[in-house]
Length: 221
Image (cartoon, rainbow, N blue to C red):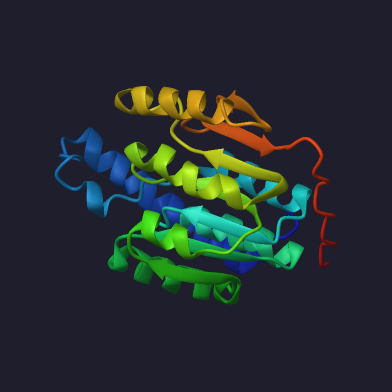
């Protein structure tokens, strides 16, 4: 485990793992995932969670945005990293019941003080956020990726990192994922790479010409 992941966080992550395994078993037994999509954990997975945490801490990111709280799995990883950088996570989701669950889990993990919860339409909420933003995790409905990016991009700090999930899997999301990646690559100053981690992620870094990167924050130990 990462150095910033203590016993309480490990316990919460283990409970998420158990829930994911139970859902996978139900799906294998014929459980209709499409009918119960709003009940599913749909987590980014431990490899992606760990990588996201490493990127946040490595960049010294302090202003962090999560598009798609879901039930809070990725929020745990982001909040643990924010605790290390002295940062804060703004986590956005349309479903209040999911954020209520996530809030409980973050409280149990000892990380709730590092998260601001915003419930509602992501596009409307993004319009109200002040920049500069240092790190953004994009993991909501795939047809919203490009509209969200267009609202986020002008608010990014130099050196900011964006991570978009589900770039390779599930297969039905590939058309939206391909459009997103092409759109991001067309934005001036944006560098991107697609990694076969978890469900596939696109990692992008904003490096505009002539704008110095924000100095890294010192991690708290």
